[in-house]
Amino acid sequence: MKRAHVAVLLAFFFAACRGEKDPVIARVGKLKITQNEFQRKLGEVSQSYQEYVLSPSGRRQFLDVLIREKLVLAAAQQSEVPRSAEFRAQLEKLRQVEEERVREGGDYLLTSMWIEDLRRRGELKVDAGDVRGYLSKHPVEVDMRHILLGTPERAAAVASRLRAGANFAKVAKEESLDAATAADGGKLPTSLYGEVIPELEEVAFRMRVGEIGGPLKSKFGYHVLRKDGEKKVPLAEGRARVARLLEKQKLDAHLQSIQEKFPVEVVDEQFR
Image (cartoon, rainbow, N blue to C red; front, side, top):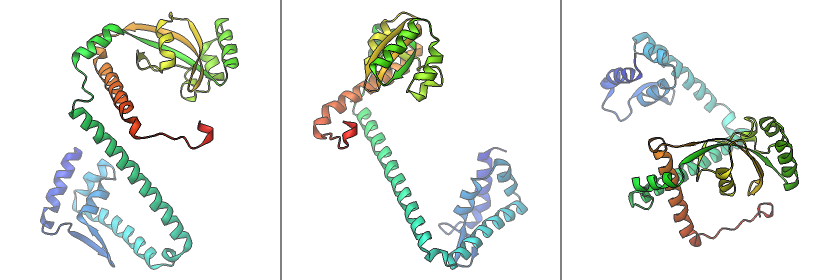
């Protein structure tokens, strides 16, 4: 039975309870089990058990589970635990974690809605001509590998080994500081022009397939590159990617135009 069917049948089952905002199904001492709680808890169990709960015996069995939970909670509330220093300290930690999650969720919601507002006002508009023009100027995507090193000397030594014939993937696993790509032999995502970090971009798109490039310095360190492949991107395949890329460029330009209003200060010396 489909999940939606279970929800519909439960709605019919609870229809008789209408009249209260959140009808009470059962009480355990001063605690209540309401219709909304029953349905919410039911949503946390497997599909097959949800279907079983549609039967009278299944409904009562699941209610017994919730009653037992409330009984445990009621007993805990009446114990000395709520008044203990350890409980209060743990509760305060939990409260702080939840408050931080709400703040982060609110920040994400706010920024998402702000960007959507920029779209509605046309600030980030990308039309079909923009996309065609970009792909006409930058028609290929590249497959690259890289090895990230901490010093120019180490990068130069690694580049020499690779140009002498060392296996790039093996050296990347041994030497690269970029843990995200090292395990895959330094492989980077297939990239259009504009999707590669700026310090590597010009070299990456000029290189021949199989060529070793670098060392190249970026804000992350020193890179040694190898070009694994290159191919032309059809408009139908690249349209959405280019539109996202151009929208990001417009957002970056907009942020740069307003940055004067929001001075940046790096306080920690180790990040300067």
